[in-house]
Each structure stands twice: as C-alpha cells, then as structure tokens.
Image 1: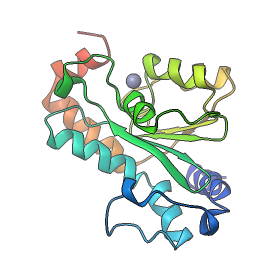
Image 2: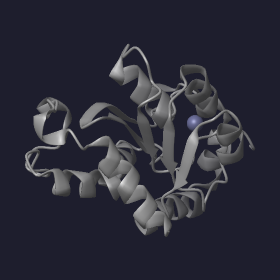
Image 3: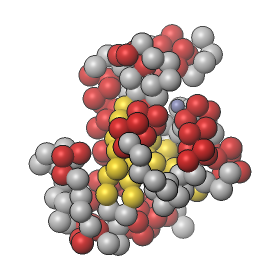
Length: 186
Ligand SMILES: [Zn+2]
C-alpha cells in the first residue's frame, strides 16, 4: 500500500462519524473547507493543507514555517505554528503551540497530530507523555524522531508532501542560522 493510500485510509478512519460530529467552525479557515462534505474535509486534512496554512502564517509573521494540527474523529482540536522568533521563546515549536491552543482535552490516544515537519525531540517528549496515537509528518528536511515515537507505540506516517518539503527547504536555504538555532545545532 502506498503511503498516500495508507494516510488517506487512516484519516478516513478517523472521520467516519464526520457528518454527525460537531466541527468547531471558528477554528477553520473561512470559505476553504465545506464542513458538510466529508470527502473534501478528509482531502484537506490528508494533504496537510491546514498544517501548511499554519506554517505559512508563521512565515508571514517572520517566524519558522512549521505548522501543526491536532485532530480527532472529525474535529480539529487545535492548531498552531512555530512562535520561537515571534515570542522569543525557544520552546514555542508548532506542535507545542498546537497542544497549548487545544487546551486540556483529556485522553490523547485517539488523536492525530499533523505537522509540516517530523517532530523534534522536544515535541516528541510531549507526544510520548500524552500518548498521542498517530503522528503525520514530513521527514525529508529533518529526520525527526520517527523511530523514537514508534518505539513508544506511536503510529508514525511520513506524508511525502512536496509542498511541506519545498516550504522548509526554501526557508533553510535562506535562513540557515535561524534553522540551526531551531534544531539546536548552532
Ligand atoms: Zn519541535
């Protein structure tokens, strides 16, 4: 099975109750997703559009373009992007911001965390700590912690998103110092 098909099936699995679920409209881009159309919604979620949108928002603010979405059973629980530069906070990675924005949601085992970049060790710590069930990321520009996460029972999916790869590759090429600071190799 190709990664794309696997990802689509995984996401579709999580939104089987989509039509009857409540979707927090305020958390979604206006006019982008028809929330009553589960196929369209699954497409937007599966192709990382929402996480990419977060990453681009960070870039527009002068920050590191990494975006994350926390998703469960037809509902976007939280979204966020890297705020390290904007807030002068070394721990403000996209995944952490996303979890903070989601607030306390109880159990995380049936959630999917989408990230435009495979999570680093800082974010992997939070994922393991809260027992997030599935992580979807892109690991071409940054190897991340896929094996570590899998060793703790997290399902890890490399999304192979050309848009995620390009976004990060462009940023790393243009801002090598900022990028090295972000991954602790300055
Ligand atoms: Zn991180």
